[in-house]
Figure 1 (tube, rainbow, N blue to C red):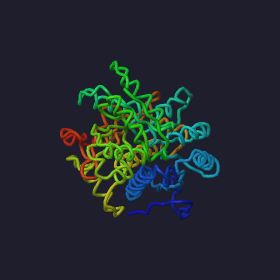
Figure 2: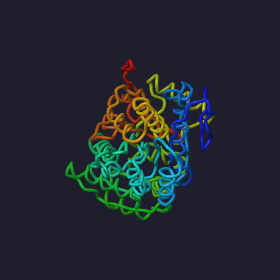
Figure 3: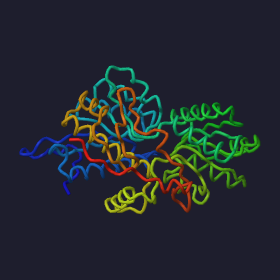
Figure 4: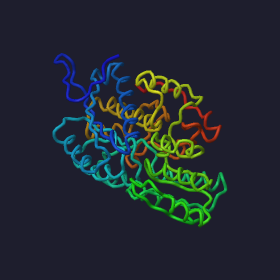
Length: 392
């Protein structure tokens, strides 16, 4: 297998220059389970592409930077990537606030970007009307997730008295807004809304208010420890109603900190392990062989990083290794399907739509015995389409 190239290492003079891809995300801090998982998926895809000779004989070289989920660091990285580093594209981005703070720098620099984690609709909407839109995404946007969460609670479980628990970050505020819209489409309003900071560890009073309001379920939009505080607080007060929320409920820090109190929690997922699908089984096997770990900290983040790199690589193949506007046009007009582990992507993008994940792809996961599995058995049987022959 050809090596994965990191940092600023130079290719040998006799070989074609590498295609340099910037990777940015939260590799430390509260969001690191997502960021590290995403980076593992990106690295795995990159190694597989390089082992097959790269793209047109050019090896992919990753230039990785940790933004730690901090806006200021994300902005500094954006300036570095667009001025001091000679890059062909950038992939990553975990936290919505970091993306929104820095995305304009990439757009102005005409740097193609593949967002693999952050989910705010505004990320793609902000520059959608530009003559050339340089921002693409392969993750389930918040409006899609909110609709699926409300469907699960209201249509599937028949629960109409819901409480919303959302953190005070742009991620939480946007998710709350999308949940309210999804409820309003059904003529419903929450019986209570609670907001909390990322460092909140005691939500007992907020839970008591929701219980007193007669909430039948809690819908969450937040990250990390406060989500565990919700599950642990409910157990402490002896209150048993379902918790449902965005995909961050699958993160290892929630499951580990909530322990047995996480059991039964449901969330939106793009990828769940232990499916019956052959390609997904093979992907999981390759992951564990490569990283020598007992778990994926965030399975959806691993898969989205992996698929995002495959999509970006296919765009580079079809642009003949050119970045900038040629890569954008290639991604918008992909001639060949991309066989990912989340989906088989056939022309996933167009000039006016840079979202790869639509509402037909995500599933509902549930925490069982400390890991995420399928909430509904029929989803385990969902198969990916068979690979199609490449277009010459």
